Amino acid sequence: MAHESFEDAATAALMNENFVCVKVDREERPDLDAVYMAATVAMTGQGGWPMTCFLTPAGEPFYCGTYFPRTPRHGMPSFTQLLTAVSGTWRDRRGEVDQAATQVGEALRQQSGGLPEATVTVGPELLDHAVAAVLRDVDHERGGFGNAPKFPPSALMEGLLRAYERGGNEQALHAVMFTAEAMARGGIYDQLRGGFARYSVDAAWVVPHFEKMLYDNAQLLRVYAHLARRAPDARDDVPEALPLRITRETARFLLDDLGTEQGGFASALDADTHLEPGRPGVEGATYVWTPAELNGALGAIDGAWAAELFGVTTAGTFEHGTSVLTRYREPVGEYERYESIRETMRAARDRRPQPERDDKVVTAWNGMAVTALAEAGGAHSRRDWIAAAEACALFLLDVHVVGDRVLRASLGGVAGAAPGVLEDYAWLTTGLLSLHQTIGGRDWLGHAQRILDAAIAHFADPDAPGSWFDTADDAETLVARPRDPLDGATPSGASAMAEALVTAAALSDPDRAERYRELADRTLERGAIVLARAPRSGGHWLTVAEAAVRGPIQVAVAVSPDDSQDCSAGLALTAWESAPGGTVIVTGTPDSAPLLTDRHPVSGRSAAYVCRGAVCDLPVTSPDDLRAALAR
Image 1 (cartoon, rainbow, N blue to C red):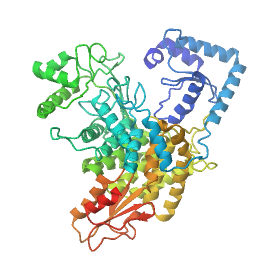
Image 2 (cartoon, one colour):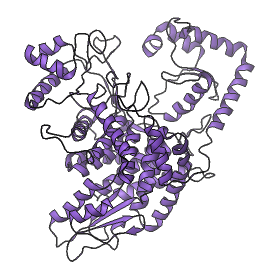
Image 3 (cartoon, one colour):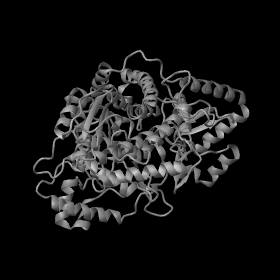
Image 4 (tube, one colour):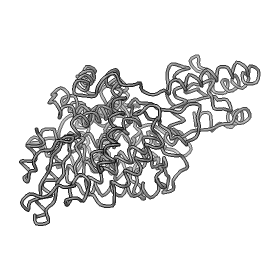
């Protein structure tokens, strides 16, 4: 609509003559998007973008829809016809408009009541029920859940992986591994530069909507890095296990393609490529190939080999005889050839016009990236990934945090005016806590506690402990104060807050820990209804609950000054490699962090203390003994 209508002079004149027009960036103002999307769904039975809403001066919607064409099409009025009809109704039937708007506003306020009091207990029985319900929807032929379009089920995959670690559910592990491989070999994954597109338009993950979002890739990095610790080692004829390869390539994509010069990560790469100045973009133009293009870049022999490997055909899998690259087999025995060809194709593609990048740095999504890079770096001994997480966190603290309040986004190193929402506080807290665990120092824990305390003060529902609003108590007053507890493409603010609280409780001093733990328990109790009734919309609730019911597990490595650095590092690495997802891990000298209070080396040797909730095992001093303790 932006190109068809908003840039059209006659349409713009009609809009400006009759309306006060506001175009909202839904990524910068997710609160507005949530409120008016709820209204759109209520009025039309479905939602989507672009979203078109007509409001009273008080902000109450009285007519909503999604896309309207420039000219009438398939029984749908044109946008100018709609504008004329709405302005006429506003002028001639104001009473009816006001009545409808009042009713819609009241309905929106009733919908924002939050989750009810818990009727079920968060424990192994509920989690097993949720996992079984999710597994019934697995697509056993193509991976993922349900039918097309298919979105990467990041949070569900992490939750299922943790369920396997808790109870040994092989079906859960298989669903994760099968889905992870199906996505990684399909067109939704960029076979040349790494990184996942937003969704697949087909059920087999072949043809994507080519937009690449930071939040998808951050969540998937976390999942693949975790899976790489649980998946079988690579075969003798394959140099690297698939989950580890995708972890490495996705991290590289984040750093190379989304990293900003200030240290943060950009929001997205557009789906469209502008091949001609001033003309509409062409979706996927940068990414798709024909056999002739492969021959031109590689020569006839290598071009034919690459076409077979990457699924490029004369008929094509996309539009106009082009194909999206897939990779359904390994180039066994020809990996050097494969890497050479892949680099040549990358270079050829880099010379094409490129999609534009949305350089907006969103706090929540960057918090996800910090978390994923820090965890992946700790588990796979990649200091460069941890360093990137640290640089991002320092940028966020410097630009996005003012006092104890968080701003939503920045551009070019300059913060915007939009205040942070609940997910921004929650994910920034979790990211900072991940750095406290992987590298310590810099008072990451103190920063995290300060932001978490601000979130508790401004987003908690005082009348319903464990329930959270998505906007702060001092934010702009909207027609309704939004709170959506269901997980979607990103975790809900409430489930993200649950993770921040569970982790902070395990890492903090006793007084804070008790307060955080009580709030975490109340929050998970509220989320239990999602796991009981709609578990596919509760992937992150499942992820957090799986950690919480196990304590969470805590590993404190007390470093001895008399011990070699290799010994303490070996214990820490063993913890990162072997511990289940959601385990809290801290390494340092005795009493240097709350989790290390009164935990000392044993007989001059660095020692690891494994605890589950308030129950701790005897300390161990060897990696083998630590693995055994974590396996219990």
